[in-house]
Length: 276
Image 1 (cartoon, helix red, strand yellow):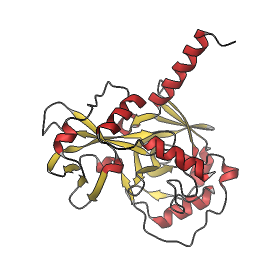
Image 2 (image 1 turned 30 degrees about the vertical axis):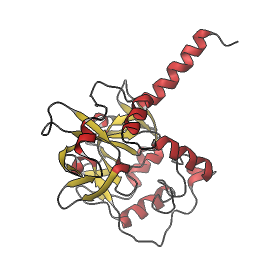
Image 3 (image 1 turned 45 degrees about the horizontal axis):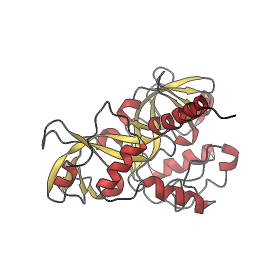
Image 4 (image 1 turned 60 degrees about the vertical axis):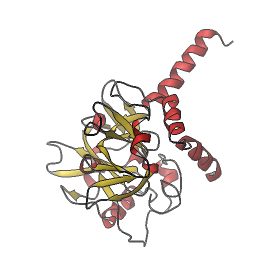
């Protein structure tokens, strides 16, 4: 029998899931990474690709365990994000990480390295296929199901960017600058970057706003500038983002309505249905 208490509990869990699935990248920095047989390290930063604006790797700081070695962790092996105790569960052993292809610290992640990395773990290549995760719109976290030919003859360039490096890039609206990139909002289900947090304090005091990567017109990496096809006044009147605010689906719906854009969750729901 369904009673009012059960309904309240279900509603609480439902809304909690919507709220906590979006995280600020800087808030996740320093989170511990708990592997199958112990702690791997802490999150240092993220690498994302500038085509789909999706996190491809966490950069783990391993401390004394693997001296001076930069360890990359793919979202394929990430499970629960524990916000209370500040850790993320990782479905890897220390031995697996130790034997994985080594990337020197402060070196760019080349496509050649990625092919070696994905070949070692047997995950499907995210750059091959029509979806944000290659052949699938969602992350395949079951290794046995995912192993379907990680080898590839394609050698196109990798387009990975660091969240730390892109933070601070200026935002150029259709009629002038509006501020700079303060942080990124990440969805822990697909590890897509849903929003850029824009600090506009140099234009009008005390306000931060969210801009979706889908609204970006182009990016000049040489000038460290992001161009959006929006007017400054439209951005100024958009729903304000505060550090204390929870990003609910209602807030997101209001934001998209303000810009007359369809929510990403609508398109992705349809894409996922068609992919099955």
